[in-house]
Image (cartoon, rainbow, N blue to C red; front, top):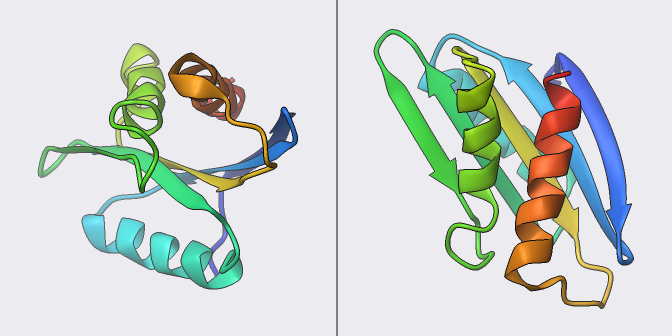
Length: 118
């Protein structure tokens, strides 16, 4: 069981976005949390994420099947703007049947990440 530091949920055109913030110190913690979420949300359409570690420096954004640059990059941008280090944000998406388009995806993933870093 992974204990996340903050969680949120938004609904956008019938798609459910579940956000999770984890303060962490290593890539291994990120991998463990991702494995946990994949197990907990087996029916999710996507599990997108972005993380930043300070030492050793690590920065990564993952779209997990969403169009390139529409999920992981917006999440990473939120972490960068808040200058958050040693943190990862995961966003689990359950597709609701209505396509959001690239702009809609960027807005939804940015919104979830923004809620988590308030």
